[in-house]
Length: 98
Image (cartoon, rainbow, N blue to C red; front, side, top):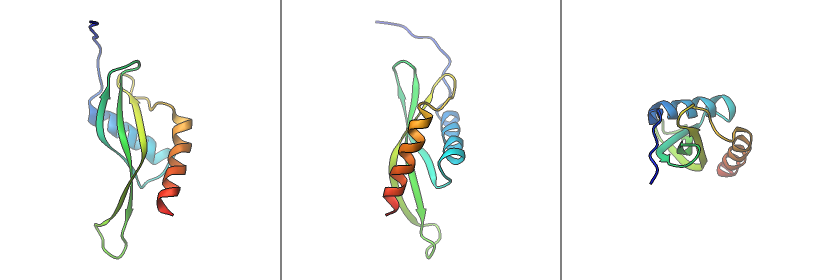
């Protein structure tokens, strides 16, 4: 058994970093939900990426689609695999709205 000692970002802090990256890189209708701490190298937070499409006729309602997953390094706060992730999320989000 191996002991690991490290400082880990709070899941809400990591989620905010994921959401900022999503907003700046992919689009404003995406959000990170459902935190899961992955105990591997690197230690990371994993979130579902949810696309929310509002119903303009019924404010406060709309459709939600899971379009992928985003991982944030749990010690540095960096979004992992940024280039591949951006392309994957663009493709998945476009397919969801069709």
